[in-house]
Length: 201
Image (cartoon, rainbow, N blue to C red; front, side):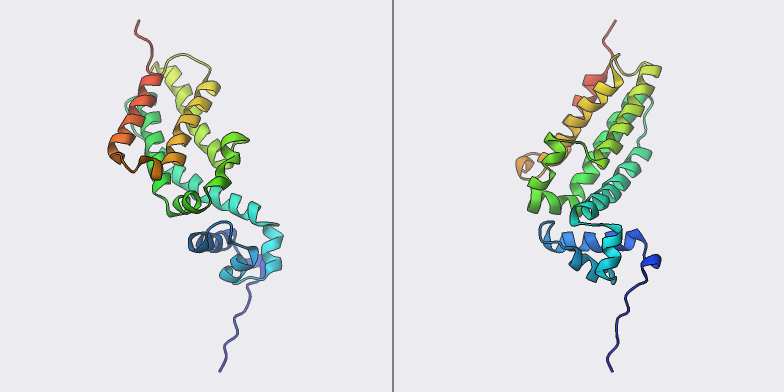
């Protein structure tokens, strides 16, 4: 007897089901080879159901990256601890880099389709970068209040820190295999802490 697989009703399918299917496709075959047809099949929905939520692969993958890396950053930032804001910023930033470079989805994107992230480095910031920048900005403002961060324009400081931190994410892998990862992350922590420490009076 043949069992027919019923397509889910469009109104009953949660976005997470679609994004989970997209994640599976990217991990299995990379970004460039992922199609909406593959994702719809993996999610058990019709192509029209998927098209209604995400009109193209770009919008689907943007939503996937925002969900995955936003959740990682939110988790590490909530766990950031320290006696003052500068310590919380450094701990949260380093923990965020560690989490993202170890994430299978990020590794798949960078290893197979690294050129696809170039626009988010040279042209515009993505949603995940804005999430990271908001954490940095909040801790900078708190650091100005408690005196643990040197004076400066917090928006400029946050953007400068974001550019430093994202370089550790994007270059981690082949460019750093000859170094001890713990030592490298320790150096990142030192760079961030030293750049934000108030000038001695």
